[in-house]
Amino acid sequence: MEPGKIASATRIMGAPGNWDQSKGECVGLPIEERMTEHGPVMISEWNPTTEERERLAKGLPVHLWVYGRGHPVVAISVGEEI
Image (cartoon, rainbow, N blue to C red; front, side, top):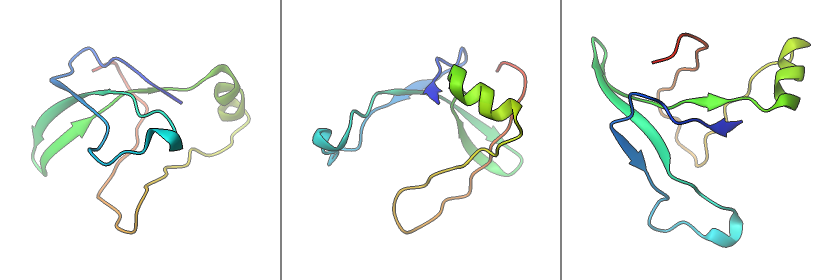
């Protein structure tokens, strides 16, 4: 998946300060910060590549990868433009 340019972005998250670029490029991620009834959230947009769209059309699942040993509260959705 490729990060999108969410139209309602309020800031761009950069690479962590200790990011090792030799392990891969970490590009800025446009996010929208929003307050919800459950507290603050950060929303980003991800666009599937052509190959990923083909796999989704075959019914294959979406996997969420979280690096590290702790798992934050997350949500994944498909929906309208924000």
